[in-house]
Amino acid sequence: MKTRPVRTLGSALVLLALCGCRTTSEDRSDQLEVEAPDAFTVRSPAGALSDQGWLADFNDRQLDELVAEAQKNNPNLRATAARMKSVAANARAASAGLFPTASASSGASRNKRSGAAGFRLTNPVNDSFNLNAGIAWELDLWGKIQNRARAASADFEAAAADFQAARLSLAANTVGAWFNAVEAELQVRLSEQTLKSFQTNLTVIEQGFDRGVNAALDVRLARANVANARGSLRQREQQRDAAIRALESLLGRYPGNKLAAAAELPRIARDIPVGLPSQLLNRRPDILAAERRLAAADERFKAARKDLLPTISLSSNGGTQSSELRDILDPDSNVWGFAANLAAPIFQGGRLRAVAKANQANIEAALASYTQTALNAFREVETALAAGGFLREREAALQAAAEESAQAEQLAWSQYQRGLVDIITVLESQRRSFNARSSLILISNQRLQNRLNLHLALGGDFDALPLTDLDSESPASRPSE
Image (tube, rainbow, N blue to C red; front, side, top):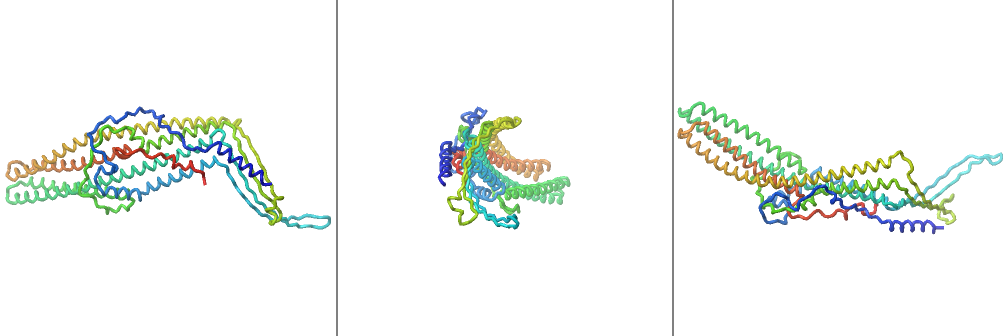
């Protein structure tokens, strides 16, 4: 009595093995509508490569600790990780359709009915006990279930790439926020030094006025200079406060302005290698995510077209039913059944074809998005490479301007004390010296930020390998639980 259901289950498993369960979507990177060069067009001076990662470019040990803290505690990154887990679970659920579904149930009931037997009323009590098991399976003859499973797998791979992009972006934002905090600290220190210098000059001018050497106009202008320096200092302190709080927020800390910035900006430790290969962008997470979304759209389009074809499903059930619990396992109480169903769409008002056309449009949109993402990546890399040369030359020019302005400030003050120049010349030389030193600090930070942007645009270091294939980690390639 039990052989028929077992044979049915065995046949189903054989068909499953024959149909296969590959759920990894094909690579769609060859559909990219961009002709990429072998190497980026902007050339940079050659330099030794480093295997310590892109953070080693900045030669600052504290950066490693800050990035690790941010990636551990940042709420936005944790939210992205949670979304990736959700997509992984959905991918497993989608792949479950490739396998038969099995269920089991048991039940017990008691009922009492009123009846009549001749001239006598009866109230019999009836008991019923049952134990059932069933198997159902839709045969994936055309592969549409596999297409949907592959689409879900590609969705997971895109979500995993999005997570990697979020990690890289968070690391870059943390490093950039640290540079901004250090620059703000240096600007505060420069403003403090300037204010102290202006106050010293004011004291000398006021003493000269008391002796009848300096004019009242000189005193007024010197006092205005001190007041402006004090206002500038408060502005720089406000900027430092905001920069520290922004960094603390990225680190997952309470933004209480408790973090102390470094006393100087780091120096870039190495030059950019000559002729960076454009293939480095193959490991950029947002490009990988865009390619995976294109693959998912393609698989869903294939599945939508196959919805127009007939479907075949198999079902089998068996169990026992008895009025006595002790007889529930009696072979004579066994019941079983087997069914095969064929269903084909005939008329649905054009819904299935409309769904297929919508999925085809989704492919076009995903391809355009993939192409735009690649174009943005090339633009970001080329822009950062070009900006590196401009910023290096600007920094050298501002370094020379700061040195000359400092010498001019000292010379103007010396000549003023000897009566050779007026106070306007002194104030102008002081203003130029302050602006030159402030601009030098700013351009040093900009060079660091540009190198940071280059690593972000490349998706990592100059010589790092592409991200590992995510197919082996795809949850859709494993049976559902």
